Image (cartoon, rainbow, N blue to C red; front, side, top):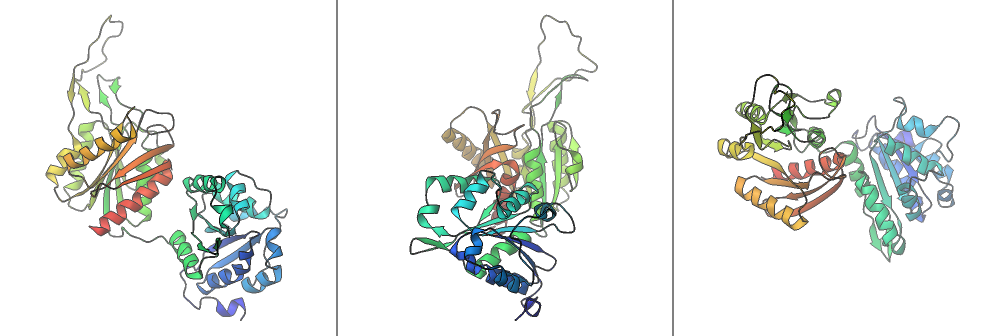
Length: 413
């Protein structure tokens, strides 16, 4: 049957979706025509780009017949890789490296784009298009420290790997059902939080000493923004209460938010929002001030030989909210500086028990590549069963992972 005859025979889950499939030099490349045919059956638009080595195993004619289009074996002067990643009229919704050899995985991890497939993959990663990699190679090529390091690095960038079945010391091509599930999850993520409303706090609060000076910390607000985005993608309705001390581009926020100044202001806004009774959960990411000074109107004169500031504790937002809203699902961040991993986790576990929250996310701050102004972080997610999940990498990817954990836990409850 021609490609037009099978189009849409299994539904329209992929209608209007362009899926770029990069085929590399594995014997599993012979399965590529079956994959593109299945994509067509769900009304998708498969586009195939293949390496020179792949053509040793699957012919251009076979792929032309299966897709109804001539596949791309070179990148021409039209710069197809740029069209697929940037141009609105040609941009793809997903790039699938399938099958992926150990060589192509390692090249991609090293930023090497010496062929049409790796060049297209690199462009899609740069354009933040979802990428799925489907390894297919002998066990000794994938299960070694070099390839494992490269897979770990690519995973930290947010690239998904679909596990292949190990048979006779080889990781073979997964079933079509498994590949299609991976495609559906990437293009049409499950709306696990549809109908849920989530309140978030983020950024740093400011405690003013006088009209021009304040106490604060370097929190950027990035983590709360990425978590909010990820929750929204899972179907949740989100509202962010953002501390005045943040470095977010306000124009990049595509959900409701408000900006507050002090810890007290943030607490009052949290209570006001939760009192509507419409929220299912509170995600407290904000780095609030623990102490506030006695405020002095005007500007304290400079030039004094000594100057003392008297501090008093601020309201404990999480503790107070738990008392006011005993059934609310609460996730809280717990930041520490210069302590061991074991001590960090112990403190977070104690905080979770003391404040009766469902999830605590423990992290170090004040380091070059962790917390506050950094774009990367390390997070230890402690749940009610005391299970500890370790997340690290970019704050954006951590936000996605954390949102998935939160969604799963909310649905289980």
